[in-house]
Image (tube, rainbow, N blue to C red; front, side, top):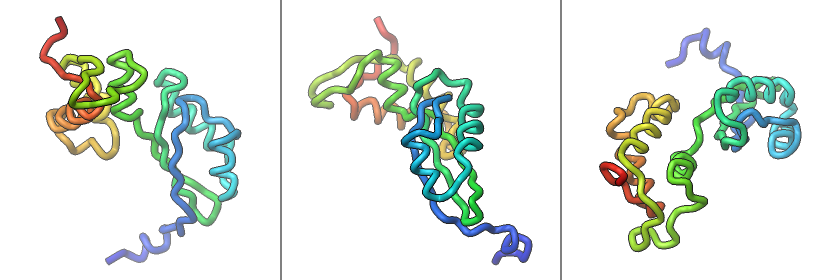
Length: 155
């Protein structure tokens, strides 16, 4: 049951917008402009906040952002770190995974690479309560579906 204060402070949500924007590269142009403009949100405020929050990442790193637009033309947003597949491709130095995962091995990565990716992903809102071991297992599963073999040490 909600308290009176929660009911009074709850703002009606107009929309939830999901975008992939390059780190430090939010501009009022597409895809950001049209997505936020249709809900009459302040584009420049979003761009400034997003670019400030993502400045620690290298430019052109694809960042997933979820924007909650409220009916009073205000918004909140959360930024997630890049996808596991993006990190795996960067660590392996490949453009894409295997065309036939399970049959053809695209490349190999060491457990150390997996551990480093897991440490980065641990800061994501949906991973913060997961153990590092379970995040590593999830990443190894993703790697195998991409045709990336995980070995103990690279020779």
